[in-house]
Length: 243
Length: 226
Image (cartoon, rainbow over all chains, first blue to last red; front, side, top):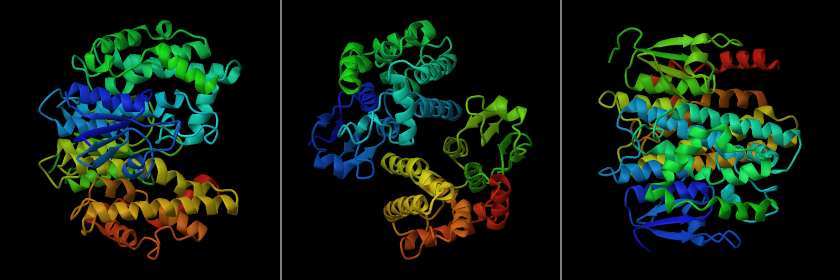
C-alpha cells in the first residue's frame, strides 16, 4: 500500500473534493474504488468504523474521514504549496462558513436513495452529517417527478444556489483570485446540475448564470477536470437509482 | 489580554450551548468581550444584519465584522489570539483532523440523540434515543482515551476543541437527566467521561458561563410549556 491512499467511489462528490485537493497539491496517491454493489472492504470498515463511508484518506496507515476535514488536512499536511485556505483568519472563517453552508444546504438536495434499506452500500450518497430522514425527504421531493412537493424543493434549491451566487459576486473564485476551499466544496455538485434540471424541469444557467460561469472556470483547472465526471455520465448513474 | 471596548462583541443568549462555546474559547484566551444578550422570541436588528443566512446565535463581532457558526468562531478565536492563552486545536495536522472529526460527530450524531430523548413522546422512543445517546458516549469515551493520552481533557492538559464542542451540552444533559430520570453521563458506562464532565464544568473558563441546571430547568419549562 502506497503512503497515501484514498478510499473512494467514482461518482461521489465528497470523494471528488478530496481528489481535487490532492491534485492541487500535486500529491501522488493510490486511488481505491469501493465496490458499492458489493460488501464494504475490510480496509474501509477498519478505517472508518464510525460512519463506514467513503471518502477516507489514509496516510501512512492513519485514516482521516469526512471530506471537508480531509481537504483541510491535505492543506495543512502539505503547507508549502497551493494553499487551499487563505492566510487571513477572518477570510478563513468565511471560507469555512460557506463550505459548511454547502454541506448543510446543497447536500440536502443531492440524490439520495428512496429508502435506506432498499439499495445496499449507496450510503456514500447520504451525507453523514445531516439528519438522514431530512435528506431523504428533501431529496425525494426534488427527484420524484411532478407535484407541489417537487416545486417547493426546486424553489428551495434555486434559492440556495442564488445565495451562493450572491456570495461569489463578480469574483473569479469564491476566495477571490485563488481557487480554494469553497470552490472545492461546491464544484463537484455542479456535475449533478444537469440531472437536477432534467428531473425537476428547470434551467440552472437561467437561474444562476454567474455560478454556472464559475463552474466552467473551475473545470478549466486540471485538478477539477480530471476529478469530475461528465454530467451525462452522472445522469446515467442517477437514472439507475431513481429510474 | 484586554481588548479595546467594542472590539469584541458576542451576540448570544445564556441558555444556548452553541453560545457557550465561543464564550469558553474567549475566556481561555483571556479576551475581554461585550456579551449582547438577545431577547427571547425576538431577533435583534444587529443579529439579522450580522447573520443574514441563518439568523441565529452565536455571532462574534470582531471590529464589527461578523463570524458565524459556533465551532467556526472557536477556530477563529484560536487563530486570531494564537499567541495568547493556550492553543485550542493541536498543532499537528493529523491530530487536528481527529479533533475536528469528533467535534463534528458530537453535533451531527450525538446531539440529535440527546435531543431525541427530550423530544420523545413515548417511553419507547425515549428508550431508543437513550440507547443511541449511550452508544454515542461509548464512542466518545474511546475517543477521549485516545485524544487525552491519559490527561484531563480531550485537549490534553488544557481544554481543547472537542472539550468545547461536547462540554457545551453538559448543562442541558443535566436538565435531561433530571427531567427523565435517565443518567446520561454514567460512571459505570463511561467512567472517563463522567470524571471529565466534572472537571470541564469546574474549569475557570467554564464555570462562570455554564448555566446552572436549576435556571435551565426553569427556562425549559417556560419555553417548552412543560
